[in-house]
Length: 310
Image (cartoon, rainbow, N blue to C red):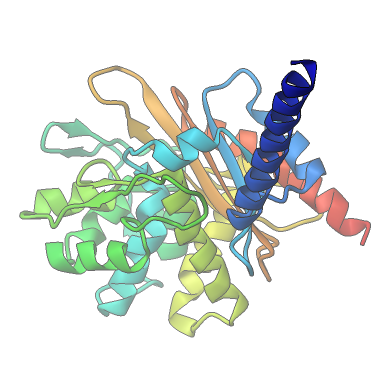
């Protein structure tokens, strides 16, 4: 009797051990081998907040640090201004924007029933494409995005992978991209306000692809996109993600939470900006883009410190 009991216990222990091994293999297959300093930084930076932080190796696409993976995999929401680099690329591909041309920010902005006033400093009144991206100027992007057809915009966002599972984790939800039927809908979708929803992992994969494009040597026409992302962290709306000793590129986004007065905050970017090695996404429930950038900063700073010791 006792022998049978011990045999049963041994069988259960063996099953548990096998499950642990299988879990480890699953995590590794999903990029689960964590960089411990980055993992600790991600956990500390998100402590007390609802959301997610995920860091991925640009070259391999494997996750090296993550907190809040259920949110990263399953949360589907509007990405706000994190879409603007892809909108600018769509305009460049279509030959519908002159990146050197400066346009006046009209600051107050109402599209349909949506109030989308610019939040950058008052003194920033005239901007070219890179500056508009750095300061996340809604006025500029609403004006130039109106030159795109609904199909051109939707196809550009799909090419970026924003409605395709990233493949970084199992059980991912899938984003949604509508084809705008009017100029107003084009503008709202280009600003990430409506018509498009993504998961944090889909957004991360889109920025990882941007980082790969940068690594391969950007075409001249892409220069304004990459410059705008770098300037955004250097002095623009994503400045709270800046790190001493390492240039970071990234973009913030703030999107409305449905049926509430709250907003959600995004930051997506990569570093080092000149030859990206990691990409990062932060999503915060009940936050702003600048709050998400501030959460990313300690993670990026940890990476910079470890990198300097190589």
